[in-house]
Image (cartoon, rainbow over all chains, first blue to last red; front, side, top):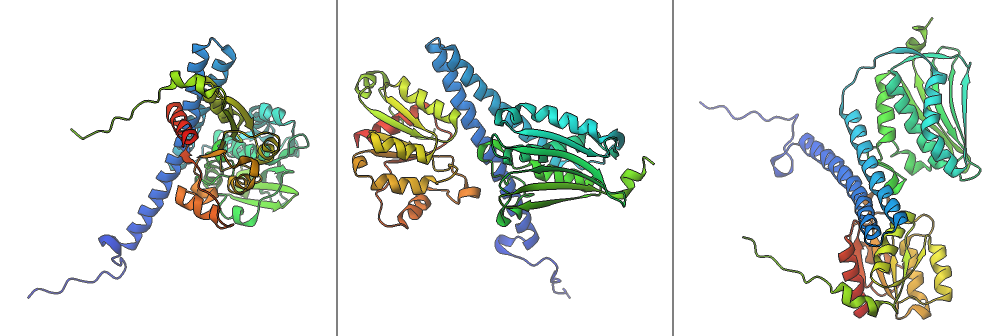
Length: 252
Length: 153
């Protein structure tokens, strides 16, 4: 006698013969691919526009036009490289390689990267490490990336000419490490806050990959920490990467 | 082999002279993309002005009447949709062609097609359709061909 096929209640068949879990995975994959395609398409637009300016400049022996066009080609290429690096960072399952480091040192290297951008905007960058010789045990390259991503957003958010960004770190009494950035930008409305860590969500239009905060969050989680946003509309935003006790105590 | 439609290339060189009396206003918030559009149009003989914001665009059209306006939909401040409605209301622009040129960002603007754009534009009452609806990235040839078509329509 043939027994009836068992009904698998934990994987309910859904549309097109796919289970709900499969549908969800496909939807998620579809969104990710759409996000990647959209970002690359935008930048290809920039590269194509740059190509046109270079060619037009060559036809008319106009060096300024060639330089403008070449700048756009480079910007587009730089963006796509950045996108690929961030996508790889998101997809890798990495274990932090902990090292002891003065947080001042990482903060300075973050400032060094953002200096030109801040200068263009006439914004001030301050490093504020309390105590100044605060040591953390972190994966230096990853934490630098995580910090840079939130600091880059802070510089983008702050107003031109009166912008101020603090790139800071402090230790709690209970030994937790707070690595943060603080800006005096417009703050983040609630509906945007909800999407901030979603891959490919960006408020920067073509200038953002929408992956920076997702990467920062992943790095913080790999350090067993949490990341949170403290924001007041019209006053500014503080993004804090809070790393647990055991990281700091390793230095003691 | 698949049947192919051979699109005739626009006769760009011969029309440069004809374009020289035509004025285009480029409304685009990205200075770099604006430079690209300006260069493409100038290379094809048009007289081009650029506005980097909706406010600049409105200021410009209060004094001048371009033959055609290219309009980016995603701009900070006043959106392209609001600006489109306002431009269509201006009596001096009755004969001005308006071409939408958009990056189409479904996440931040909820726009993904001409139909959706037009539906949203029409919510504030009847508004004429744009003379062309183009999406970025766009090749210079396609842009010129569409603009010339819009001007001749």
